[in-house]
Image 1 (cartoon, helix red, strand yellow):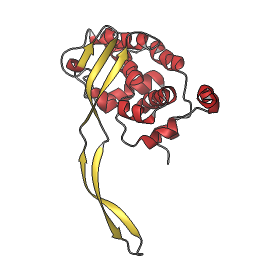
Image 2 (tube, one colour):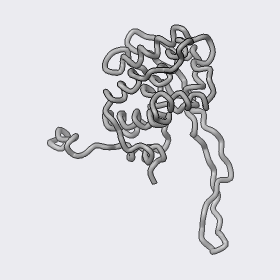
Image 3 (spheres, helix red, strand yellow):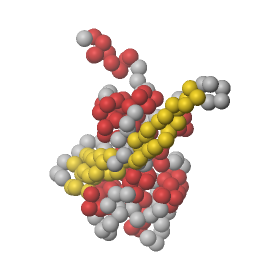
Image 4 (tube, one colour):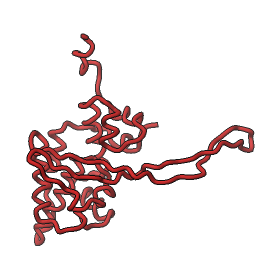
Length: 209
C-alpha cells in the first residue's frame, strides 16, 4: 500500500519548479510586512527540509547554526516514530492475528542542512531574511492549523506536498534509500520505493559497468 502523500500527489515536479512556487508567492499581509517574510520562510523551509509542519513548529531559533557554506538546523525531533510490542492471538474464526499491546515514542533527532550555494541557495536566503528578524524562542510562533492555512492559501497545496517533493528529489538523486531514510528520519525505508520515479535510462552508466 502506498503512502497517503504519494496517493495525493501525482505531479512530482522538477526542482526549479518547486523553487518557483516558493519564490513567486505573494503573501497577503499589507500592513505587517514581517509576516510576509515569515510566511515565505515557512514555505522555503518546508521545501528545503521536507519536515512535517509539527516538526518545524517545534524548532527554536537557537537550533539554527549559520556557517559559511551551510545553515544547519540541529536536532529536529522526528515525529511518528514509535517502538511497539505485539502479541499474537487467535480470533473467533481461529485465524492467527497480532495486536499492539505497548508503544512508546522514539526520540529521534536529525539535522537539516540548508545550502548557501547552488540552486537551492535562494530558498536558504529567503529563510535567513526571516531568521534575522525572528525573536528568541520558537522560529514560527504560530499554531499548526495556522501554518496549514498559510501553505494552502499561498500555494493551493497542503504541507505534505513539499515533504513528498523533497523526498522524491532525494530518492531520485542520492539513489540510496538507507541514506535518504536517515536524512529524513524515516524508519521503514521500504516506503521510499513509492517515490522512485526513475527508469533504466537514468542508470545507463551503471548498466554499462
